[in-house]
Length: 267
Ligand SMILES: C[S@@+](CC[C@H](N)C(=O)[O-])C[C@H]1O[C@@H](n2cnc3c(N)ncnc32)[C@H](O)[C@@H]1O
Image (cartoon, rainbow, N blue to C red):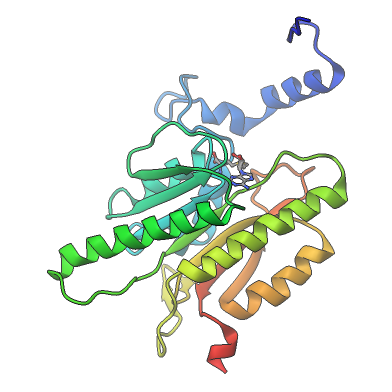
């Protein structure tokens, strides 16, 4: 049996989607030459890029060209967030490690692993690569000697599996992905050193320690997750719904600033 997909006889839902895409300013902006405004090949690979640009404008410490040197991007394909991160860090000496179940075209300065982040093997491989690369770099900079793992400056997670429309299931998947990303982030993020103070830069507070930016879907179970698993571990946790995120979507982002480490060790 041959199955054909036709855009000419579109179903009501695909017409709605096409209609929405044609009216979406961020879909158009994605393809506009920043100098001329003419539509060319896409500047960013995804509409999501504008969400990260917006989040980093509000919270500059998550991708700061002079202080951020290492970024991990979870659920990275097709690569919009990686583009934003590697562009912002270009002036410094930043490096990005990215993971996705789907493949991704290469981006300079980004090391990509194709795999399911829910698999322990994939998480271990990512962690090993990050640690090895960072230690290698420090050995060169410090002229060998005893060097430790400095820790990652920012972990980003825009991971989301395709929505099933069954709310309880979609929330369950979101919780599962957030749990995996949080456990990983706790393992690799740079920890604030004892005595390091919150400082101000450009009128904004900068919390010592690494940062985690993570997509979630609004639900009381996820509020509970934040209270138990994020708030005690970071200097500050805020919920952001960038204007580029569609209002009909219940997605939002936790911006977790200043990783403090295990609250039990701090008591
Ligand atoms: C919203 S898209 C990310 C878009 C990306 N931030 C960008 O700007 O191009 C969500 C991504 O999460 C990925 N994803 C979902 N579950 C995953 C998993 N278990 N492991 C790895 N990637 C996963 C999907 O394959 C998808 O590419």
